[in-house]
Image (cartoon, rainbow, N blue to C red; front, side):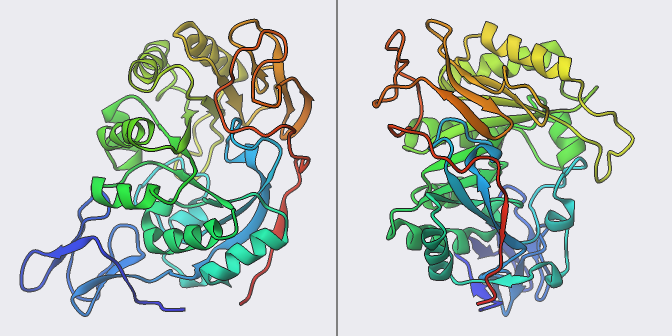
Length: 357
């Protein structure tokens, strides 16, 4: 694979520096230097991607693990990532990948065509660009998505949404769904705990909702004492309803001590339930909790009549009460999402895949 793959979003700023314009960090790089993400570098006067065609691993997951609850429920999704990240989350759950400077992290190799062929052969309906943020392997992700589209395999971005407008438009032309991490509704949180800013993420969410056909869901990891107050959750939910509408699913997930925040306690179950209640009170139709076992608050309920439509026990689906056209079979209310007549039967399995090609 080409370890100096040419990229598109950069410009020269001086005789000895060029600026990467992929994300709002705008790293200015001297010859031979890498950006904050570790994987974009100045090579012979141009920004190149050094992880094209190389991955930290391939795996088949339930699509609900992304998490996506309203996009082809029950189906298997072929998941992969690379190395590096353009955020610096102190609570990162994949820090061994996203914070890695080591090319040894990239154990597997695969061309876009090989990934698409493998996904099809293994019965996956979609491919997820995940584990680290696909923003930083922009060209590789797009080429994989193009190869997948030729085989009618959908593409799903799992992302923090921290990207500039021009590459964002180019990227999402090739995506079918996205789960966007809205890590907080507080700029101070973003600055202190992620090294990034809130507004570009909000801009990405509004862009996806109003200027694309990409199905979107939002995840907020609730960290005790940092972003779990009633006031912040209330403000976050009000913003979602006002700017994105009531039908965008919102997932509140539990924090577990990791990376540089091992001295924090795990998120109490009651905090997640409280956040879900706040979301519903504010008019969000589909609110979920995750990273804890709660079949009730992980299931999909009809916001009109209250019937349980999709039963979930972890990643296992149970009762299914959607009509063939995605409506509640009791009251007829349309359920937002991308559904088929029947759910997939993948269940909670996680299957590692070795490519080596």
